Length: 226
View 1 (cartoon, rainbow, N blue to C red):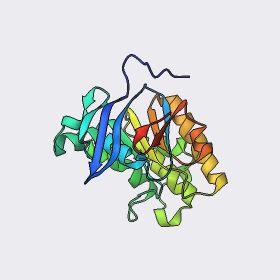
View 2: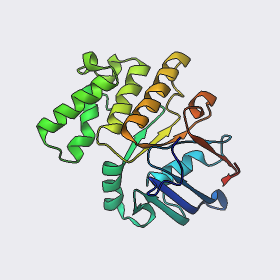
View 3: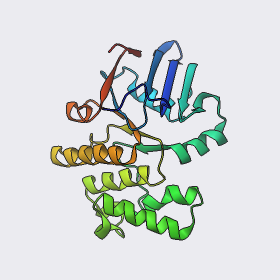
View 4: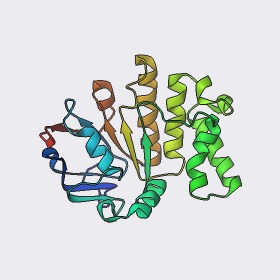
């Protein structure tokens, strides 16, 4: 098991609060995630899980507290800095895949490398390796609409990892899949996290998904209760 007390945390959250109008959605949330550690964010609907994930990824800003990703204070960055941090240090996996429908599987995976201006030959090499690792070499030219749900999520995982981020944020990554495909995706996430040493924060209602994580952080009414 990876220790949360890793000397250089992939993620540090200290006293984070977030309000929407008069409603406090996050209330003094604090935790750290070590490099290579997998953490499940659990809790009932409305407990603040997705808002917290949005704050971690810089999509939303907390009203108080500090969030640090691989030593970079997310809460202090301007829009340009946030975009750069997301391109370099964060990979995101969504419930509904969010693949670009006019790009092939290979082109979707390549996109983060293009944004980082990775040289063409290296992009091709890394995309081929990513496709092979998720078992989709034969589907490289397929458009998302030609792929099954499980295949689309495997493309999304490859895209999230191809630029070698320090942190993966996953929002119900198996919520739109049947149980067999969901189990395959969870096994792949666990294996890839172990292989790459990438930290994973996983929002889930699924007991099976939470079970691949080293520990759980349970939210209720915006507070960490367990």
